[in-house]
Image 1: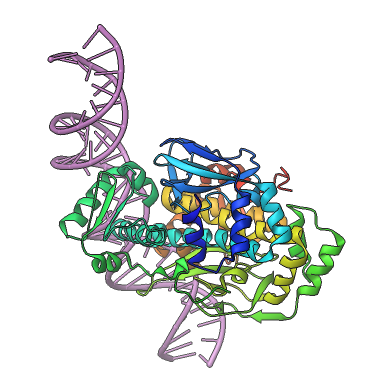
Image 2: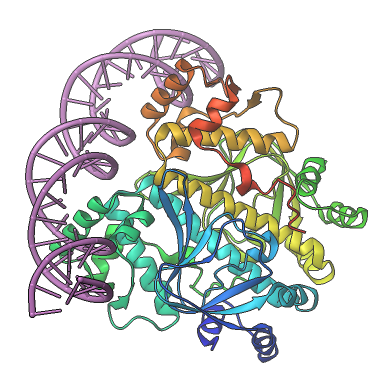
Length: 240
Length: 240
DNA sequence: CGAGGGGTTGATGGTTGTCAAGGGCTGTGG
DNA sequence: CCACAGCCCTTGACAACCATCAACCCCTCG
């Protein structure tokens, strides 16, 4: 059930069998959330966190006038709202972009982990810090990169992150989102997202059709997005 | 020495005298970093974290071609690179924008905290999650707000954050940065930053001269930036 | 006195946004 | 079975925000 979660953790740090047992014992329920549904609403007080088991979820901030910004994507294996353990309520929505399955972990179980398993606590603390790294990279994209560069960078990021949990086949992976949602991730309009996609296809770099990303030229994609995966902390430099 | 740090922590959660003593005992050295100097360089392995005692510091990501993006500002009292405790090396630079004084905290002392002080561990975990909240708000600004809105929002954020540690006098506070740096925070060019500043001054909203921000009309400033401080978690909803 | 950083201004151009319309597909109900 | 709504994608014309380039001023400092 939480195999992908363990894959993600172990891509960065060893998890002992005992710790694995602790994690497994911490999970309480399984929750299905259909596509386009808000899983956790901004400001709502909650007493559990959720591990994404399957599907694509996202964090989204909304403005009163309808403008919205996705701030991070989540793939299977991610602890989508682990930060709610210390925040108690969120500053943003967690939304399901496709049909999603979650495992719930009561905050009381997380509290127990912080009291009895220091290493596992640091592993999870690292997890939320990794989210912050992704946020920073998105800030760089939104603030300093062109539409084309942002899009290429996003496709690279998802290629790597989905690869970690075994969800990439060759140069192809599922990304079940619409062009409107893609635009709200990249900080551009849907019209411009559409034109940028066409341009990338014409150049033979990548295609995005029907919720499937097909990378035609990985090197060109990386170069276009100036993609350097070091912010994902996968090089085994051993963060501890 | 770390009074502002304690002010910041206590603005969100009670810190017991015992915990205060633990924090004080964890500090090792004091470090001076002159303006425009990199305090912690991207990728550099470090075994201590730093609390900012005075000055303005920032996190910055650089691209090969010279483009750069500040991803967060830091004020006195902030644990500027607490995340290096779990990350071990950073994905970005920590730079001093003005002359800065830091207190250093060895990671070994932080490790001890995670092993013996679960509540304090959660307080610090909360601290890094708060940084992530600020990142998300900046993502929203960079992706969805106009130059004018971004600038107003930033001035509001600094007004609140500096206010927490007692560094606001009426509607005035020090923000010793150049227009070039301001531009690199807002994802615009220095020329455009300059023109946006002039527009705000003409409208009687805010002035920024010589590294000093003078708010002329706080309500107008908040409205221009659509500023809602809830992402700073200060309302005493008690995250516990 | 010259160099250099910070700020300011003008002219021009380009990336991106806005507005509007239409095509293809799916699901639903008459 | 067809009409229709609705979503997603696509295209064209035009406008706006912001970038680029260049020049100049002021101040400080060596």
